Amino acid sequence: MANPHVPYQQPFAGYAPAAYPSPAEARQQILDDEHLRLLRIGYFISAGQMAVFIPFGLVYAVMGLMFSHLPSGGSPPPPAFVELFFGIFGAAFAGFATLATAARLVTAMRLKQRRSRTFCLVVACFSFLEVPYGSALAIMTFVVLGRPSVQRLFELGTHGPNFGN
Image (tube, rainbow, N blue to C red; front, side, top):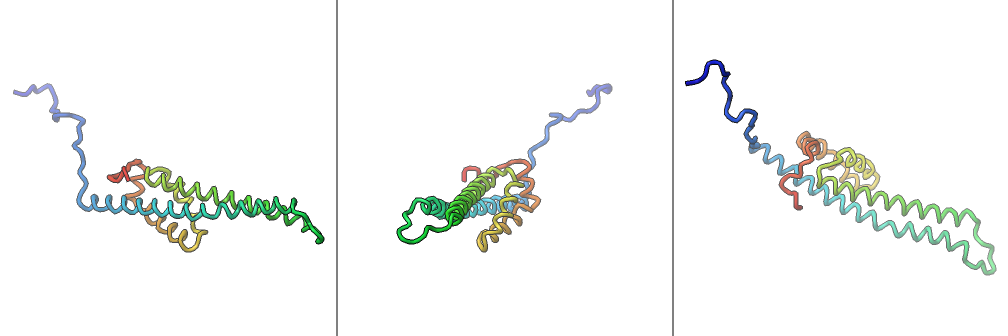
């Protein structure tokens, strides 16, 4: 017999059963995970392409330094601004390529971790400058990261079923 002075309590008060996703939500989760994995691969490839240009910038920087030390022979030496131009241009080019490579590598890692969505979008904006591959990668980044289901993944920081990949 129930005590009339004690209000009715549900068994296991405060316990919420685990919510199982509907089949549509499960398919969307699989699709989102696959698209994020492909974006990650795309950013690794893009970082590799950008890293190829780092030595070219360094070659120009070394050329700028070498111009000042080359013997002039019988001809007059090149103007001083040529040495300065090659050195500064090469160093700036190598520095930009290094920063762009690092940003794309970090973006690829953040896509796996489902963190820093804003950083990924900012890097995608700069990827528009690398026509045509970078532009396609940036557009796909905006499409995928703009989905509400992907935004929830980044808010929760969940890795999804492909955590080991």
